[in-house]
Image (cartoon, rainbow, N blue to C red; front, side):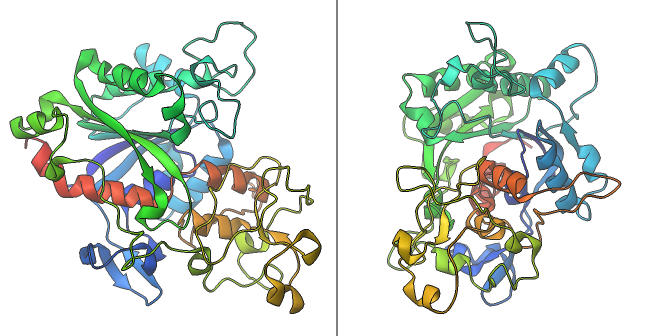
Length: 409
């Protein structure tokens, strides 16, 4: 019997893929000395991960391109995949639920959600709760932001928690959130008040993706909330301590970043990829043609093959980092350039590899009578917004291991 998951702010499904498992990733992304039981099939450089005990039964986002990519990936994996994914603002669907419509499924075990991060990110204007964007992404006319602003959409996630009353919820956002006044404490307090104060919210922590086998310097703050009435007595006591005993800690222990298990590098991640002009993979064929703008602009640097990648951003202007720069622009990969390879930015597939999406996830889709096309511009946006699949898998497997320790039968 699978535990039922409601996924909010789902995007193209990085959290969903990781939470369910049963996807391929680099073998180097899994520390088999610690987790040999995570491997379902071993293909040498690649492995198929074991499925988890979790199943996404409801997904939601406002981006149509994200739904298109998600539905295409899950088309042969879930019955009625496109019906599972609800394309709408969370504000609108919560309002419908309060009006009596049966929006959300029953018997929900977990709610997950990476609420919008633009207003907390150091890459943005960092307006936080004072976002001047609405829940639909439009500019607010009013001088005072409301709870329907983009910076306060976590409140609506809290409302979904109050409606569905899961045993557990997991919320994700950018590390920059922790640097804005008392934002982290305010969010923890507000989440704890879900269902009339029915949840314990353990102090949020920042997870560094590279420490979990993701070839990227991505840091994300994670919030865990547990339904008090669903917890075993010992778990309730453990989760309310100032220092949570390790056997009850919901945060997974790092697996990478030691001498025995170093970080996964870009070179590791790009194994087997042909250059775009000879590749048969549409996602590898496509890369941004945005011109080099000089080092004063974001995204004008060259990735380091022998190291982890910078954080993959939700790139709107094509200024994704370079796979290689020309000699004129101080490119370091002289051997590649001398062999005839040209300056270019990271391809869509390379960004997906850095985010640990499996290669059978298609990000470039042609237009058909049933759906619009999915372009490289769309792909860069939804890939950059995603939770790395392997990081989500680490979180899910840790919760899976401790599920019966936490919750009553």
